[in-house]
Structures are given as C-alpha cells and as structure tokens.
Length: 228
Image (cartoon, rainbow, N blue to C red; front, side, top):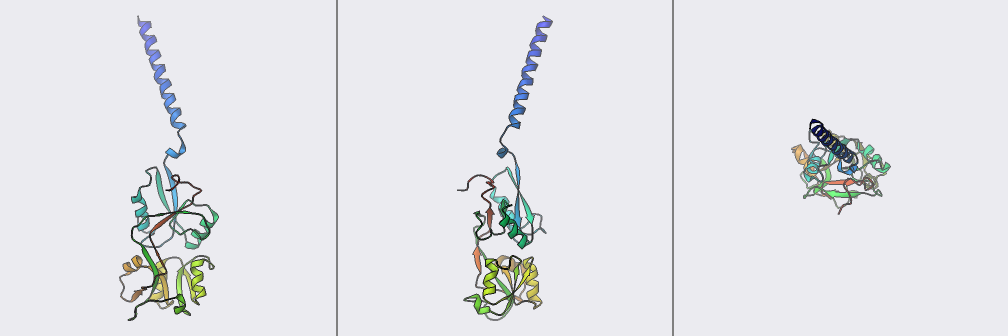
C-alpha cells in the first residue's frame, strides 16, 4: 500500500513539474510586443514645455503621460541641443520627438493639447502694438533663434527678410539678449512669455506659427502599431 501511494505522489509531482516547465517556456516564447519597452523622446530645452530642470520634464511630457497610449510604454526624455535634434531626425535614428520632424522626413504626428500655442517674437516693450504684415517690415534688425542648420526653412525666412540671426541653445537665452539690448527680437511663445511676468518685455500680436503641442513619431519604429 505504501508503495502504491508513493507511486501516486511521484506521478503527481512529475505532472506539476511538467506543467511548470510548460508555463515557463510559454512565457519565454511570448511576443516581445507584450513586454514593457522604453521609448526615447527627443526634446530641447524649451521651458515650460520641455525642460530637464523639472522632475516631470515640462508641460509636453505631462501631456504625453496623461495621454496613456499604453501601459507597456515608458517615455524617456532625451534632451539635446536643437541642431543635434534636427540631425538625429535626418539620420532616421529616432522613434519619438517633440522637436518637429525636419521638412521632407516622413513622420506621423499626435496632437496632445486642445489649445494651440502661438509662436512669435519678443522685444523690449513699446507703446505701440507689436504687429507686422510681413517679416520684411522688420528688415535690418537682429533676432535670436534656436540653433539649427542655417539653411533650415524656419531660419531662412528671417535671412530672406534681411535679419541678422543670432543662434541660441534655448528660449531663455534669447530673451536675456533682448533684455540686454544685444538683439532686437527673440523667438518665444505666448505661454513661455507669460511666465516671464516682465513689463519691460512685449510679445508680438502677430504669430510666426500657431500650433498645438504635438508628438512626432518615426513610422519605422511602429511604437504601438498603425495610427488611426
């Protein structure tokens, strides 16, 4: 009788062991897509939208986390200078970016904000409203722009209008140059300017670009499948 029960117990243990092995093998063979992955997001210093000085990396990354596309994706900020961001995008070695995809580079985009951001120029405050019909109206002046290739389309419009361009690594540096009278204008946006809380400065009513906060994706990466 003892041998009979011993045989039953041994058989039961073997069955449990076989089940455990089968389960382990199944886990190992599960598709990689079901496993959590980390995606680097190209970003430049552009507070309050993108900044390495804040734990949450700025408004753009807060919106990205709230979008909750997939619990299996961890978004990791990769801060680089503007020119470097443009070069990485041109190389194709990227998956996600808050820096706009270079003209001519295939990309997908996801709008993360309901309200749009107005990108314009900052100058020392004057009594008159800061507007222009064309950048040619401001010809001969100097402007601080985020560093990129000198022949990039955005910078080229200032060159064509007769501006002297001073390239900077971040928005705050450009505004400091305006305060110190080293340039006439600096690139900024309505939300960033509002945080300055400085009556000595004036933001333009005219806009260079009006756009929502947008995440750009490299379709080659196929981060979470085709986008609708």
